[in-house]
Image 1: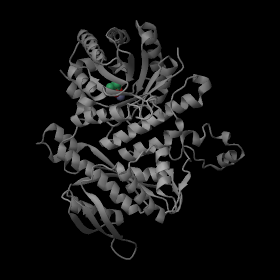
Image 2 (image 1 turned 120 degrees about the vertical axis):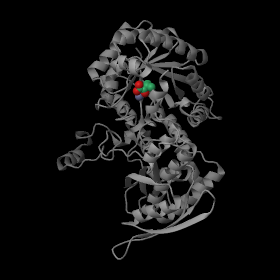
Image 3 (image 1 turned 90 degrees about the vertical axis):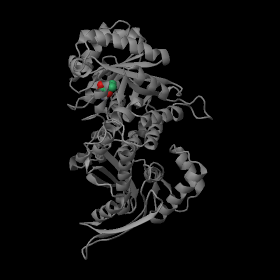
Image 4 (image 1 turned 180 degrees about the vertical axis):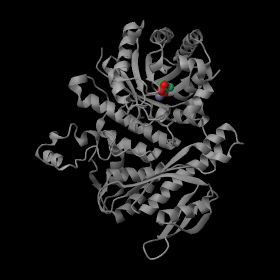
Length: 546
Ligand code: KIV
Ligand code: ZN
């Protein structure tokens, strides 16, 4: 049994389908690039049959991230996977999306639990076995790398599960992924299930066994690790554990457990763990899903020691209370990189080291933003640069763009905001509003111009780095206000009105950051309403019937 665990990241598929995690195509591409730099083995880039936009986003990732850069043909690149239901139409679309990658994979799934077969699929056992054989063979005729997942394996009858997996192996599957779709099993059960699959399924020695667990009972990481200890050599994970309902197994927890407890597992991954903190922030910014402070590995408090006894111990020897070093996951690496007098070359070189290769036009834009920031803030760190790049280049399509903002607030009058936006018509729109505070006044002024009624579900603000001159970072989540009144529109459009949209903004002025974040979320909502939106994961079940 080999000692390498492949990391299959599904942040862009299972993760992106969690409420409010919708990302734009540009954001997905940037996350995929960061995942490749992180060193994951497989990126599940999306579900191409969901919509033409999803297909195109996966295709771009396959082309741009799934191939080595021109000057470095031997560079290690990740496999790019596309998800498909067990239908020819889905498989065709998945293949269309991933085929241009150097190493493409089709991942297809069909449920094998009694409850899913009876109520969702309306199929009996024979029909399910036949469909697996037919569709895995069909996918294998197109792509040499085919992964099969028996959905809801955690609640499937073991003997039937073995038959289903044998069918998939005979038809050409190269990876068998075992999902605990509803997060129901315990570590003993899940580890036992993987062990019994390895013992009982004919031909299993020729394929990779993979684990895919959900966190409904808070057991996702424990279950995945139990499966790995029992012999699985691929783990399906997401950054920050985002995903359906309570989420998926988080990449950082699995990878850091394998690393920190190496003597127990004696297993390795290809992940550069020093990139973890950076990609965790990127995903949180793009999705608007804030990381809970006490989240293992990536939470703001994960390496903070508050109690006096702990602080005293840490000062005497850091291993008294620290099992991992913060720098192992990239925390505290906000080095001083550039300052007011740094030039264009220095900025280009630092950005390239961070993985952002900008062309001349984009470098001009980044340099102008950098100089503006350097005038206001003495020390510019990697984290500041990351926020600046995200803000400048990975904002959702600007339907309305911020052109100017002025606020008056304090204890001596009514908080007032005057806002200037450039609209889709290219014209400048100005409005002033009063509110309970400067952010409320700003949002009211924006609402008056944008005229897309939205409910602000969540507003979060924090400082990116330490110090009074730190950049403020704001994430918001919004939803269409009139969602209940959309009964007459077609199903696709209705999704646009029920989804939650996240937005992110960074600036040394926190009211400006707040305005940018709100506009980013509203722009996503407006685009979705204009174009209709893609079906969510929940709709996939409905689409599967028949
Ligand atoms: O949870 C699940 O069952 C899935 C499958 C599509 C693998 O996400
Ligand atoms: Zn899942």
